Image (cartoon, rainbow, N blue to C red):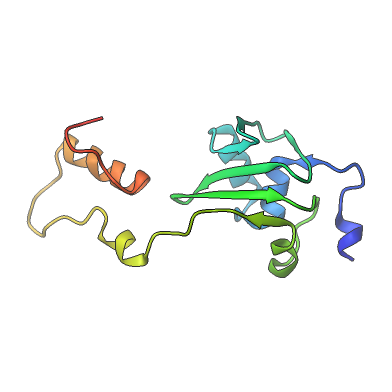
Amino acid sequence: MAAAQQDPAGSVRVDSWIWCVRLTKTRSLAAAACRAGHVRVNGERVKPAQAVRPGDEVRLHHAGRERVVVVSKVLNKRVGAAVAADCFVDNSPPPPPREEILALGLRDRGAGRPTKRDRRELERLRLHGSARPGGN
């Protein structure tokens, strides 16, 4: 059955492939990530219609984490998680420990509203995992 779902041409749209192998929850989220520049194929930013082939490296920045995967099979239909895991090789760095994620951006109770500078530092912490003191 999995052979029937493979694309005979050997390539498929990158947004569709990201959704098919369950790296994003919906295809529209995958397309939005491509349009926002969060998806790179072989080091190049791509549009949602860019074709991917076996052997391509796909980098996806999604949900505060970078996923680095190498395409091993091309699919054009969404498949189960067990089959999807066979369609790529995951070279992503390990996710940060849960304690670090929860500790980011906590403020003392009663500290009042954050200033514009505080807010920017909190956003930088949430997006990148660490902030550089003293600005950029």
